[in-house]
Length: 116
Length: 115
Image: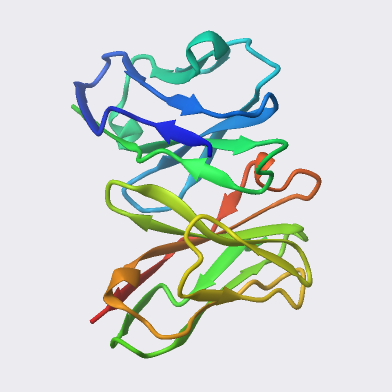
């Protein structure tokens, strides 16, 4: 079965520091989709990015960037010049395209605290 | 648009009681799902539906039932509540043609405590 591991349970940084959140996944499928979601202290879940298994290009969106490497089964998320508003729990998730379509698996999440 | 609406936001039950968590979406999404969130475990899929009249089990379906009579609504039923079902429950929806492969829109969650 597919699996997502976020080894970092909690990370604390000072504002303006760069921080990388790690995500390692396991899948037997060649077609799959990777996601990052943000859960701020208010509790809602906010979609950040989706990446399919055939597109290994890194992506940048403002201060956020994502590094997808199939060779290491990783989909890491970097926040540049972190801000207090980035404090949240971040979840990495995997959805398989063929064997388990409609079955999304989430990692345990990484709680990021950005201190002023 | 309201997006995905969950009711109630909070609920306390006694062991053995039954209840239904409501979920409604107004985006005409075909795919809907229920997750539970427990500390240190992320979100786990309970049940999902790819359209009206079609439901299937996720990773942790035991103790829960679902039905999908309309595109808009996807209620989750706890048949006989147990303390192990104390959790935060999220409903989500996404467009069809890929189910969970599409970005999901989440409701605000229902915090459920079973005493």
